Structures are given as C-alpha cells and as structure tokens.
Length: 327
Image (tube, rainbow, N blue to C red; front, top):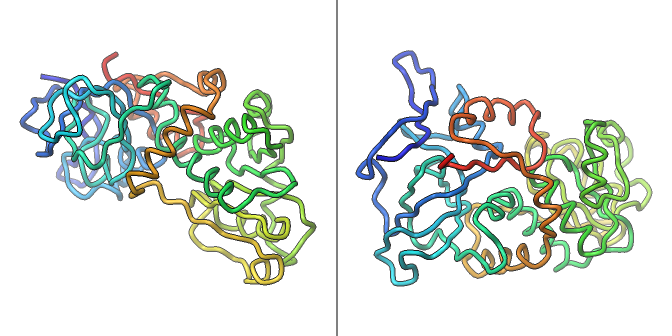
C-alpha cells in the first residue's frame, strides 16, 4: 500500500480530492515504476484538482504534472533500479496518472536522468515551471538577446521566478513585472534590477509601436499584456511566450513583426524531444544558482494539495511549491 491524492467525481458531477491508500495494481501499465520523492504544484494541477476538472479525461485520477524520484523497477534497458529520474510533460497528471503519489508508473521515453548537481528536491523546485523557463531562456539566447533589459512578465509565479533567477545569474539585467507590490523584495533577491508594476503594461494597445525598451522577454501571461510588450521590443529582439494566464487572444497587429523584426517564440514544455530535455536539465544544473532556488521553495504535503490547488488558481502562490509525497 502507498498513499496518493485521488481526484474523483460523485454522482452529481462534482470532483473531490482525497489522500487514499492504494495498491500498485491500480496504476496504469507502463515500462518503468518510480518511487516518487517530490512533485510540485502548477497552474494545470490546480485545474485538475479543482471543481471544473476540465483537463482530466477519466476518473478516478492522480494529478501532478511532474515528479522526481528513484527507479524501483524497469522493463527498459535505459533505466535500472536505483537510477534517479525526473519527468515533466507528456500529459502526465492530466491524461495519465501523475506525481501526487508515492509511486508512479510511466513510459521510459518520458523520463530524463537526473543531472549531476541536482537533488530530487531541487529538481522539483525547478519542476515543469523552471524547465519551461529554461527552454524560454535557451530560445532567447538562440535568437540573440539585445542590449536592453530582459522583461519577465508574471515574474512572481513559478516560470517567472526561475526565469528571473537564471537570467540574472547569466549576467542580464532583468525587469520583473508583478501585480503584487509585496513581492518586490522577493524578485530583487532573485536578481531583478527593475520592478515593473503590472498596471504599466495592462493598458490596451494604443500604438502598435512604442519606444524600443526591452532586449528580450519571457512572457508568462499572454493576452493583452503580450500585445503591449511586442510594441516595446528592441529591433530584432525576441519574446519567448510560455503562458496563457491572460488569455489566448492576442489583440496585436503584424507591425512589430514587419517593421521591427520582433520574433515571437512559442515554448511548449509538454512534448519536447529527448535531446532538448537533456540539454535543458543540464543547463538548469549549471546555470540556476542553488541559493536562489532554495529561496523560492514552499514545502507542502499531499494533504495540503486541495487547498494549494485553489490557491494557485487564485494567484496566491509565490515561487515554487515542492510537495514531499512521503511526508
């Protein structure tokens, strides 16, 4: 027997999340069984736990879109018992049972060996959000970051926090956008050199081009804010867009792309090729300062998850929530 957070629907169609003792035979069939040590809380997890349950196809279900732990059994020669591994993406925690469980069974192709220099707890302090942040930073670097500060929207959230810390560690000036003034000290501690109030970028676009202000941008918000930022980029600068919290509609014109050569780079962390996942995790182990990572961590247990799922949907979560599934 082992513990897992089970989300199920009652006869009235309402979802309920409870910690239960279950057996291994309830897990879906796959090549590798992992003794999970840590998971995290992401926006998608909040949606899976919450009353809507729109991301979950079949009930009962175990949420948790990422996890890190130790291989317990494997039918794949690439992994053996005792190997440390990390998993992000592949609809785990949505279409396939996920990381809010002391054991998980997944396809070998979905795993990545934990890189040297990272513990399983640190890997989940990074988690899907930090992995996505590194993919965004890599994309900006591949296209060339310009002279101005790099803007990070939604900076107090999971993706934004890690992106801020990585960019600052790499020597870039970081302008962090937040709608919560109380997070200014936190963002400064991560390396932000400028705090931008969300209200400054929340206005509807009046002119398709404004002054060339930003040398790059990691956008974790989308919607109207992304449209506004596009018109403020330096010539040839890039925006790595990773989130839809502000909506999927982009009320912009093609003018920033045609007249200023702005690049809009879409970042999808779900189905990244294996080589790119390995490259990103290696960069995380090398370029994310561990003292900054530790400052982002909020510890949690399985029993905390129903409330945390609601909190993250309400925008109340700062930094990275690391779930110790064995606590």
